[in-house]
Amino acid sequence: MKKAIKLTLAVALVMGSTTLFAQKFGRINTQEIIMSMPETKAMQTNMETYAKELQDNIETMNVEFNNKLQDFQKNFNTLSDALKEMKQKELEDMRNRTQEFQERAQQEYQKKQNELLAPIIDKAKAAIDKVSAANAYTVVFDTSTGSLAYFDEATLTDIAPQVKKELGITDAPAAAAPAK
Image (cartoon, rainbow, N blue to C red):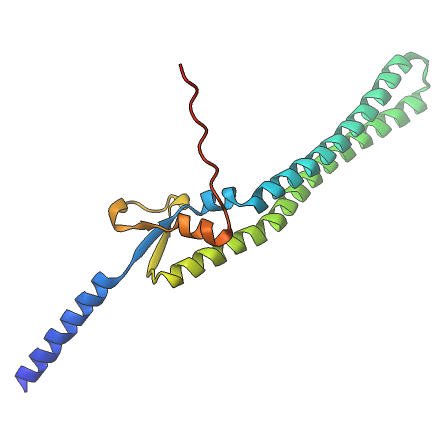
């Protein structure tokens, strides 16, 4: 009876240690993958255009405000007190609207960026999941988050080339350094 328990325990330990050593660990820099995707480049172009539109609107509002302010300052001595008060209120309202628009524009920019980035992140994650499952990785660490205190580079397999292949990303050859 004791011999059977010892034998069972020994077999369990051997199988457990074999399973432990059979695990595969990988690493990937998700940020690098996302930045190399063509969809990200298209998103950045889209966001630059959107930011320019917002900036143009803000500048138009600022020009209009400055024109009214200069007109008010130029005609200040000729205006009645009631008209001065009305123009000051109008200028203050314009300043507040411009400031509110800038705040809303910043929020809208962030919202649009998140909306456009979400499907890109999902696509990259799906490719990482597919490559990880196909190659039987138990764990894949994301080195872009910086949350790893230590990892032995030699024991982890970089799966970025396989994920890039899955996403259809081809790395451009590095430009040759100019001769001195």
